[in-house]
Image 1 (cartoon, rainbow, N blue to C red):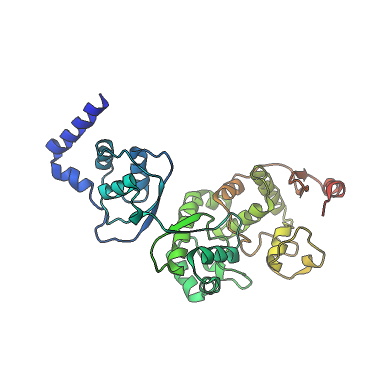
Image 2 (cartoon, rainbow, N blue to C red; image 1 turned 90 degrees about the horizontal axis):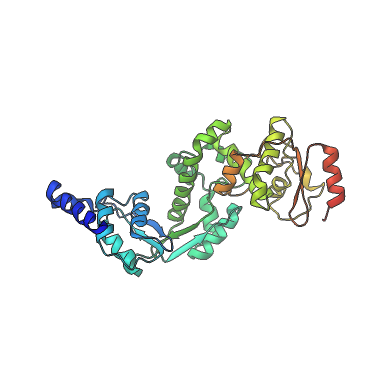
Length: 344
């Protein structure tokens, strides 16, 4: 029955609107645009789901024609992978590539930015995987002229990233993800564009909630980055975010060890009294509000947990050696929790 319906649909297209309509609908979105787009096809994807994946990437000219072709195209060998397609390719060309796993279209290079990574760590990962120089990457990411170009291009980047005291301008804006790129001469600019395009899609989705929070994008990412690195387990993120929101709403200092360690650019468990004295606007033991900028690159999950934080009366928290978090409503409770559970 389904096969008959599909055949009838094709006949209607051919007879009613003309074969030219169907053929044109399977053509390229933009014959003159050869810019490559990474398209990830998950394991077990069927032809119909692939149509929607390609459409979401802006690679389908006519969705109805593509759906019909997916049904009658005999695509029986669809292979999961990340492919590099462009708007200049026809729908059938892309489907044939996916159906055969054509290596000519498979992304050959990738790099990963992990959740909670800092800009220097992101540069190291990118350099290692793409055979670039981390020093050159860092120099480019600190180049004021280049940063101004990025500010002009991306709505979420503002002059806030150029404030005096900012350690790494793009901190917080390099979305943690595995990025697939193609080409023998991969540039820092191309790789950075791939990252910021992903950041754009994530922040655009969350923009209404961020605006409703009363925070700027920069302030929000600063707070989310603290939540990212203060939370060992995902389940604690909304509660920890709530603790920080309570402190902000009461005009208290965040007093996050993570921000102090970032100011010192070091990783450790114990923060000394001497560490707390550093005069940096990242130091939330010295300055009220969120730090001057993000202290890492947070994930979308952490961003969402920060926006949808758990509303409690907790003002303090302490993480035990096993990662279990003890929450307290008063300073006396907090001190008691530390005395009974301190492990460093």
